Amino acid sequence: MLMIPGQNQSWVSEFILLGFSSDPTTNSILFIVFLLIYLSSVMGNGLIILLICLDSHLHTPMYFFLCILAMLDMGYVTTTMPQMLVHLLAKSQTISFAGCWIQMYVFGALATTESTFFVVMAYDRYVAICHPLRYTVILNWGLCLWLAAGTWICGFFFSLLHTFFTMSLPYCGPNKVSHYFCDSPSVRSLACMDTHLIEMVDQVLSVFLVVAPISLIVASYIRIAMAILKLKSTQVHNKAFSTCASHLTVVTFFYGPSTYIYMKPNSSYSPERDKQVSLFYNAFTALLNPLVYSLRNKDIKRAFLKVIGPSKVDC
Image 1 (spheres, one colour):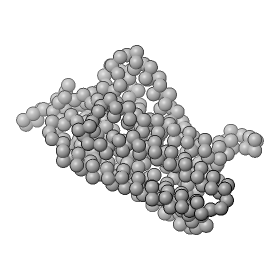
Image 2 (tube, rainbow, N blue to C red):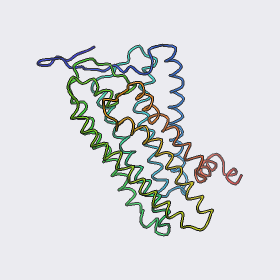
Image 3 (tube, rainbow, N blue to C red):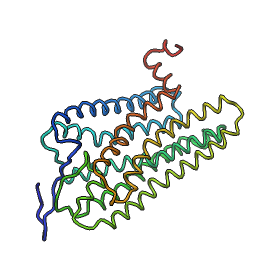
Image 4 (cartoon, rainbow, N blue to C red):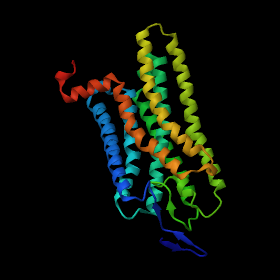
């Protein structure tokens, strides 16, 4: 373990990411599984971005937001999984202190942006269903750009605070992180000082970044449900519920695991369980999002058939 000498004690200069297993055979199997998951996630989200860019019929606020969601999924799965794949085959699982800082910051920024971005997507569905005639007037392109930019600024700002507080703690050994990437609770558990104050700061940030968005999303869908129930057409009912179901499914996949990891007290920290849960919302959510939106969305299917061959669109 490399140490940087300080005035009264030494500080770690790198961390060791323990990952999932120390058995080479198990790691080889995990490498194949996670490589397939990663490639499928990148290709699935990349395909959605490509289809939305190529098909002019998809140049609407709803698909603009879906395109950004796909970019976020590609971003934060790429922040963690390539390094994990390398560590599964390499003899060394080390990451420098600066590398850990950057990974924690970028992952936190993209995840926080996605957390707030789901509120924007819920607002989009609210306007589309509750005010359909004024949809393009309310959600004009200027507002769409401001909403998107606001979520990114919010995400990168709050992640900077979160990462700064975590990585400013004294780390004087041990340096073995029981995780496959530099996740804040796992790294913070190695600090050689009382982290109670940092945990309180984290809880406050979590209220703004998890509880508040969930509350706004629930409020939006209560209004949406009330508006749908007032409609007399069964066909309109089914179309509205189908559109909202995709968003709610993705929201559940994301907020369920992240709420468990970042809202629980440090006293209930469980390394093995946290690794499994974080893998779900990190890797599997990015993989499932394209499937959820493509399988339930006729416009995406039509755009895909157009790319394959115009003659197949009417099939």
